[in-house]
Amino acid sequence: GGKKKPAAAGKKDKAQSQKKSKKDDASSTLLALQYKKADAFADWYSDVIVLSEMISYYNISGCYILRPWSYAVWGSIQRWFDDKIRPLDVDNCYFPMFVSKGRLEKEKDHVEGFAPEVAWVTKSGDGDLAEHIAIRPTSETIMYPAFADWISSHRDLPLKLNQWSNVVRWEFKNPTPFLRTREFLWQEGHTAHATIEEADEMVMTILDLYRGVYEDLLAVPVIRGYKTEKERFAGGYMTTTCEAYIPTSGRAIQGATSHNLGQNFGKMFDISFQDANGKAAIPWQTSWGITTRTIGVMVMVHGDDQGLVMPPAVAPVQVVIVPIVNKKVGYDDLRPYCEKLKATLEAEGLRVKFDDRTIYNPGWKFNHWEQKGVPVRVEVGPRDLENKQCRVCVRHDGSKSDKPTEDGTIGPFMKGMMSDIQKAMFEKVRKERDDHLVKVWKWEDFTPNLEKGNLILTPWCGPEFQDEEEQVKDKSKAEGLERSGGEEDERCAVSVAGKTLCIPFDQPDLPEGTKCFYTGKPAKCWVLWGRSY
Image 1: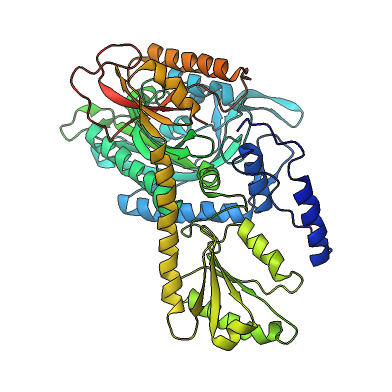
Image 2: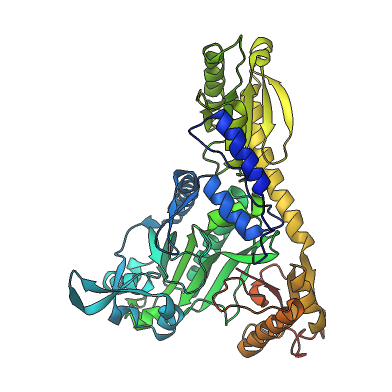
């Protein structure tokens, strides 16, 4: 998103929209988006999340106010996920947000992974604290001492807990609402199992739920796979991920991760149990999390130059009814008809809003609900009242049609329309992603494909080659900067370097004798690379 703003972008539009809206309603100025998504993506994103009333800025850098319009999306994800983990016997709980220095630093690799981002409480009132206390960057070191108390026999396993909480990671890189923030909301699941097989099954089951959050709720396709050893969770044994793609910026973004932690944390925190044969054993543990980053991914993937475009599955309002009055037919004439239509649609389980505010004209309302991304707008004017119909306007493709309201078909029609919209939004983005998914067999094609904003599959010598992976990152960054003639600030959250996203579960055929695209060693697998957030 580091593109320059077009000079005096949108000044004319801004002036016009201010002039127009003053005429509409002196107390409220409605601004159109000032930036085009394709021209100034980062500015467009900031504009959309504020104008759609998702985010308000706050006076501490990297912290943002989640307004009801975005928090409702998080609520939908929460309810869906809770309903899915309950049958897996996962129980919700809550642990403190503070962790002592000693506990946080117990697992060496783990703390090194998080150390630069940990925020510390060092004072209380005027006095210094005897021991500094960390605010959780993640809760392994907070939960696992309790696991050690609770687990002593194979009968205590499996232990499966989840918590919905906030996390603080005091990042040095430039913050972006939803994507990279100093405080964010998430769920984190933590389980302990008697065998590695059970732990692996848990990891994969949860990863598929994360796929469901992105694909079934947010209409964003993801690629599932394993992280390489270099990119896996600090202190863990195996990390799985689902990776999304943002077509406008040609960048990947990590969607959610699910980890098999192995027995490492069990050893560090003295978690052990007597197995069925009376022998002492260490449990296999998992941890997994998904965050409010989901909302940012949804905005970036689906939004357009008018504003948000909400997938119906998570839209706080799925249908907005806007009455259109004239001199002969006023609000009082239209209200009963609109209220009846609202009740009909709500009976189908739809989330419906009747915008009967008289201080705003229809044009203002159309613009307002378009910016907020409501999937369907229903217009009801004098002619619709007379003909017992309504005009149905679809947000994501701009289509319009007139539908009868009194013959019993409007409810089922609108309910069906929601799943049609959801599917169409998903397929559109999947096609865009697949059009940017390429195979590269030799190094010289690598950076040029990154430049085109592609996701790249390459033959690779194996997940254990960490130094070579770092070399690819450095070399592609150097080539990328050379091509653009620019420099990269180390605070930049969007590097031009190509990095590994995952080793996809879905592996294309690897012909016998294929060489790694970088080292020339025999290739063991296909790896997915890209520029990433």
